[in-house]
Amino acid sequence: MKQIVNIEVNGDVHEVAAEPRDSLLEVLRDHLGLVGPKRGCDGGGCGCCTVLLDGRAVYSCMVYVLSAEGSAVTTVEGLAEDGQLNPLQSAFVEAGAVQCGYCTPGMIMTATELLADGEDLDDDEIRHGIAGNLCRCTGYQKIVDAVQNVARNR
Image 1 (cartoon, rainbow, N blue to C red):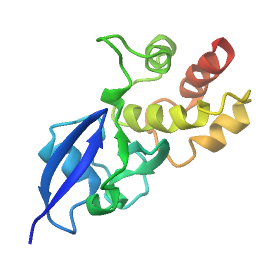
Image 2 (image 1 turned 120 degrees about the vertical axis):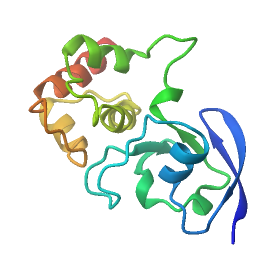
Image 3 (image 1 turned 90 degrees about the vertical axis):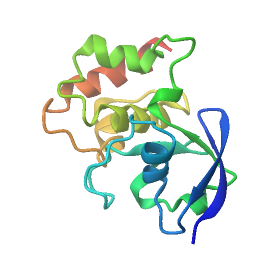
């Protein structure tokens, strides 16, 4: 039986009728039309569905939407302001860290949390921080470079 869920996504509150078993990913993609979070493994193993839930990176395929009620969700679409990419999104483009692009939204969301505390990060810390996100195209170095560029320039 569907239940009404009030969920804040990218600063806007949405009222959605969802099944208790529906994942946050399903609601974001199928009900709200946000295609940044990708459907990959549907089991928390690839990271391409990563979003921020109250500022913390989570696999949206592993979060029941009912448990996200009252929380603030940010997807990759919510990072841009006034149609302009945020610095991390721009850094991914500039570093060529986007290849096929399937993992990119999840990587960016994970890196957003990683960069949030303002600490300096070395390459090993970045690699450890993004370890839950799989990429089959880049070999990770360009992704690490993009995150490092933002960390240095903030």
